[in-house]
Image (cartoon, helix red, strand yellow):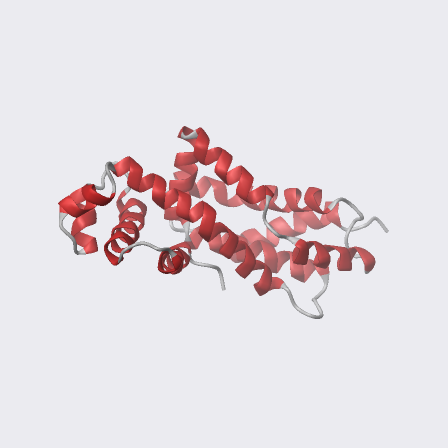
Length: 215
């Protein structure tokens, strides 16, 4: 099951020490920015969905850009770690399958996550391209994720002779790079046709040629 950014964002808001009106405004902002885009969303739209007066929005957040920044900050600081932890829990099993099956499950899981959360990911990508603060936040968060469980799995497959004895981060970069090359074009496409099963199988077949030890 691929994680849902909107659901995790809502859970994160519940954990914050802010008023119910602020939570409603932030949740509405993420929903509308995702559905309509930042430029096409007005504070009136946000107020209407949140069930508050438009003046309340301005009282809590001075500008629409400030609202966007709070939404983005919350996703980076609160949601991304939850996404990583849930993902690792999903693919971590006491006795894993063969590396080929594990790799395809991993790739398919992340591709499906990307597709399910495409509108929210577009927000992060857009902000990271135009806002250096956001870009540095994302880099810092990803470089400080706790991936020890995933590294342990990789070491298991290396010990089984199913995975090349390379550095964990290098292997992960190859997997994410190839997987990302399949889904990245969706950021700029309006097409809803993407065969996750076929794409993940193709990416797996390609990666196995480099990640499996030579016989």
